[in-house]
Image 1 (cartoon, rainbow, N blue to C red):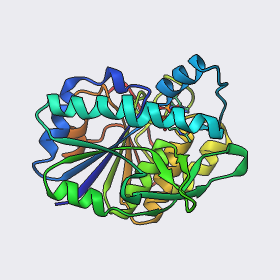
Image 2 (image 1 turned 30 degrees about the vertical axis):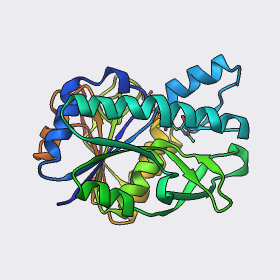
Image 3 (image 1 turned 90 degrees about the vertical axis):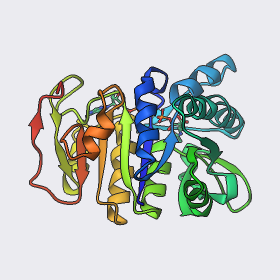
Amino acid sequence: MHYVVLKVGGSMLDQLPQSFFEEVVQLSQDAYPIIVHGGGPAITSMLQVLQHETVFTDGVRVTTKGMVNTVEMVLSGKVNKFVVKQLQAANGLAVGISGVDAKLLTCRIYNEDFGYVGEVEQVDAQLLKTLCGAGYIPVVSPLGIDEGGETLNINGDEAAAAIAAELSAELFLISDVPGIYSSGIGSSIYDAVSLEDIDALIESGVIAGGMIPKVKGACRAIRKGVKRAIILNGLERNGLSRSLSGESIGTTIREKGSGIHASNGAK
Ligand SMILES: Nc1ncnc2c1ncn2[C@@H]1O[C@H](COP(=O)(O)OP(=O)(O)O)[C@@H](O)[C@H]1O
Ligand SMILES: CC(=O)N[C@@H](CCC(=O)OP(=O)(O)O)C(=O)O
């Protein structure tokens, strides 16, 4: 069986219909699904309560040492168990872990300017394989551990892409938008974008904010052998099953393609 990595963004986690989790459980009959979740908005709310200022640069949170505990508490506690419980309500058996467990995600500081943000160096997928092989659906919160045993905050898209690359998995980035907009929020979306298009789209500002780590993660995964990454709206009805059965929905990022085809995002 092959692996399917599903990154579910915090932008719409709490609006995901139960049918989404049922689709994931259904998928586990034919493949090994692994969920990597975000939780950016929930982290920001808790940081506000604790009076920490939130700064994002290119979609990545600047994280001080004092903030890492809060990030871990929110992601590995509240958000992770929410996802586990939703899958279990859909009759799946889910196990929540973070990238710290069994050294799933070993990382190093991404860039001193971002503080305690990790860039994934190594993925040890043994625990994921064991869990999947035993019939569990792993639910991963995006934290990692560095050489010195320090916990680092990893962007969820980057964590999902690194895991997908290690497992040569299919990669879905489930978010609150129908795909990559071609010119501003609400415009038509691209059906497909090839690796060579991405830099220009970021440079021109068409791709911004939280979409940047998504496309960068997707590009890295594709360079490491993942066939393609699909950006999909979590509210798209039966979106996962439809996409897996070959229907063109969302935006596919792939190595090559005849450039860009804009289509109506309201499909
Ligand atoms: N070209 C684009 N197409 C779609 N979304 C974009 C684009 N540029 C920026 N974005 C923003 O990226 C957001 C998705 O990233 P993010 O909020 O981090 O979501 P998630 O929590 O699902 O990872 C969208 O809601 C949108 O505001
Ligand atoms: C380093 C970094 O940016 N970490 C993210 C981790 C959560 C995440 O990725 O959440 P979304 O998927 O909802 O964006 C953060 O602190 O928000």
